[in-house]
Amino acid sequence: MELVELQKMFADFLIKQENISIPQFEWSKEKEEEFDRIPIETLLDDKYFLGLKEELYPVHREDIIEFFERKERGEDLRLFLDSEAIRSGKTFKAAVMLWIMVFKNIIRYDLHEYYPTVGKNYGLAFLCASRDLEKSKDVTFEKVLPLFLNSGFFIDYFPPDVTMREVKEMKRKPDRLRFPNRMLLFTNSGMLGELGALGYDLIYAVLDEINFFPMVKQSRRSVANIEGTFDAADELLTSVLTRIGAQFVIDGKLVPYAGVHALSARRGKNDFLSRKTVEYRSDLSVMIRDRKLWEAKPATWKGRQIWCGKMFEFDTETLRCVNLWEALKMYREQFGVDLMGINLEEYTDAIKED
Image (tube, rainbow, N blue to C red):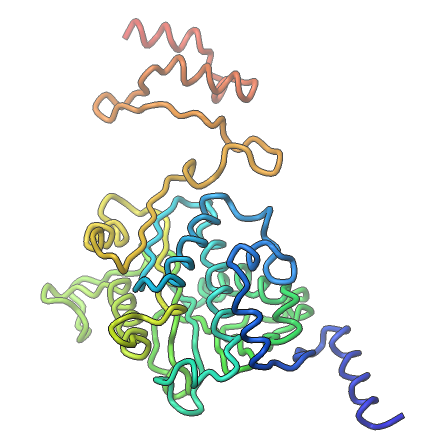
């Protein structure tokens, strides 16, 4: 048996043991053209890519398809502001969109032909930031990395430098993932200065839980506003938009597979995303979503009843439900029990007496 065959057998053995990540097949210009024609719906549903046909909430699936279809139509879409309730699945949606962004860029056979503004020997960087470094690593490790490691496409052609075995054994939470074709996914709490030294150009950023970024009053930082307040969320969003725009705006428009996704749960009436929603309401380069929990989660999901599917009105002046009897009765009919053990008849009589 020849040495080359022995080496291939040994490499195959290591891959099966999940001790090493190397591409199993070579990439080519023909494959770029083939995979670039694949619709977003197929990337979402096909098990060779993401295999999420039964995993994405319908409204989130619609968001993803709309976002990428608008970009592929040539719209100058630069920013996605995504305000949704806690446990609505928004971070998972962001991870899926990040996967698609990496896919759409990593398939370029000649990166510098596709992006002539990228410096020679430079690659592309994707940022996943949160309110602190550990939270950023948690999002990357728990939401983003499994999408790549469970994708047959990435394992075949562009495996990250972290193996499934390392994930299963929880050996480490990576703060950087490197892919073939000079692609880097890195986590950060807001510092971007090191990218130039690493030799990468930032093309896409996910800013998770941006409403909870710190705001420091009477700050001495040079980037503080005239009142002396340092707004970490505003500073990071401005920084990444400026950096991506400076490198990837060509002929006045952002290239299709670049941008910023800022998402968070609500923190109050005047939180960061609420202010930005008002500011960008008429900006055609910004896609905006503002959802409550029941608007994101379907009433029935995977055969389980999540909520009854009906809504009631709440009077903010009297701080009481409108038609409370009907609302409580609706709950009992759906779930078979009274809400928190309330006796509906006694409670209704007490309200009438009041």
